[in-house]
Structures are given as C-alpha cells and as structure tokens.
Image 1 (cartoon, one colour):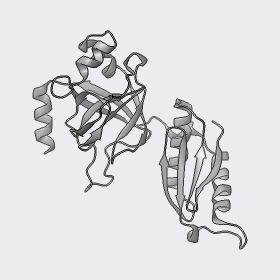
Image 2: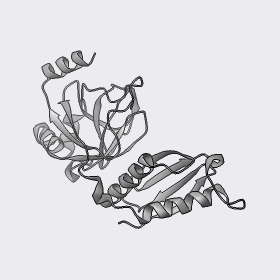
Image 3: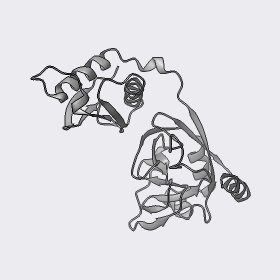
Length: 236
C-alpha cells in the first residue's frame, strides 16, 4: 500500500499524508482508510475529511482513551498507525458509479465555444472528450457538495477565467485547470462553464445531504435541452 506519514494538524485533528500528487493509488488508500475509520471508529473519532493526497482525521480529545501522561494526539497517532498497517484497499471492491446527465453549451455552458476555440477543437469534440472519460471524486469541498474530480483529458485542461463570475447557476459543469467539477449551489466561481446538470447535488434535508461522495466514479451523459427541462421538472 502507498506509504503514509502522520502529523498533528490541530489539538483536535491529525493529517495522514499519502503523497503530493493526484494519483489513483493514493486515492484508493485514502478511501480505504476513510471507510475503515467510519465503519469501525476508534473511541473519540469524530470525522474523516478526504483531500487529494491527505486525510484529515478529527477527534474529541476528552474521549480518546490514553495513558495519564500521553497527549491525545499521540494516542490517535498510534491508533492510525495500527490502522494503516492492516489497510488493504483491494478489499473494498468496485466504487459506486454515478451517471450525471449534462446539457452542454448554449445558455447551459456559456464558455464552451471559447474553450473549444482555445484548444483548436469543435464544441462537439470537447463534449465527446469530456463525456467520454470516467472520473473519480477525490474530495468534496469549496461549497457544500462540490466534487473535485480527477480524470479530465489533458487536452481539455484550461486556465480559470481571469474574471470570476459572481453568480454561477447550481448544477453548472465546469473546467478549471486540470480538473472538472460541478457547482452544487448558486455561488461565485472562476471555472469555465461548459454545461449544466438538472440533478441536485446538495439537499440539506437529506441524509447524506450530498449526492456524491469521495471515492465515487462519475460518467457524464450528454442530453438535449428538452430532457434537461424534463429532468429538472421531475426533480422539483
């Protein structure tokens, strides 16, 4: 398994670092440790928050069992080291595959034409490249339910916009640098908008509130405007 280091982040959190890059093996190890901690938490465990190459582990210091002179962080470090020693990402099986319908271009993706021109591609070629790949949710962040996805074709990597927008519609599918993602709620943002999904990615009244989770696989399915409206109406 990918080697990892453990360090104190705060008085109530440790960080487990598996590397410095966006990598499939690192993502597998982070997902495996997350599942292990959530399914069999140690006393005092509160939450695990995955990143691209790290896992932040939050704990309640008062609930961590320890020797009198041992600080809680030292105990948690020992518990994490023991958990890592027996970790085997291959036992998790296939991750969940989620299909995301997307209406590309036009009012749904106002930056598609400019992005295609930037790369010397047609809009149809951009759509084919973007929807032809399979992506992995590495982390949820920035705003509630926002998935940072790995797996974007190198030909589509595009710098963020020089002037961010103040309002991006919920469901907007975008490209920023070497990544693609989906804005789950209306918010400011500087990524290039190429399409929009009618699916709701963040429903605060649900459990869990986020449609996507770290470790999920994603495939985008191009749809026409009529299907977008039909699906959006059904969601409401």
